[in-house]
Image (tube, rainbow, N blue to C red; front, side):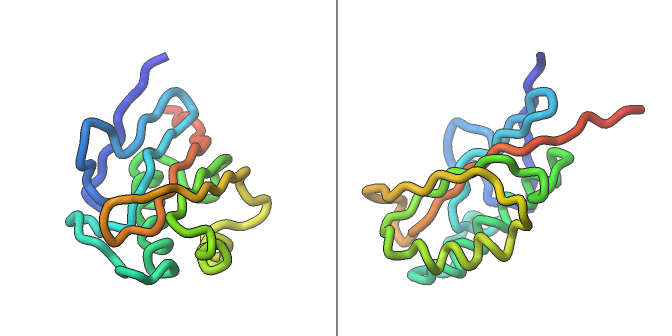
Length: 131
């Protein structure tokens, strides 16, 4: 099975040695997305709702570039710097997904880059396109 990097200018650019996502067969593995705009600037400093939506905007753009969508996400992992942000994050999370919701893990972590309160990674299913 081949694996192909996914890269789109409509999402925050990678700031390290990783791909925005990798597609392997029918699966798309989206790297952890931070609350950055397509130019790499922080969105919504201190506002977990704005930061969560910015993360989802990045994920949606990356999935689109990979031939998938948020409707095809099967698993997410949410990293929060403060678990007290869970309820506010969850409101935005629920607005971006429809039932059946993806499987999810949510973890409180020590820290993220300055000003960032959330990171989300996901796995999606993208059917192969036939010619």
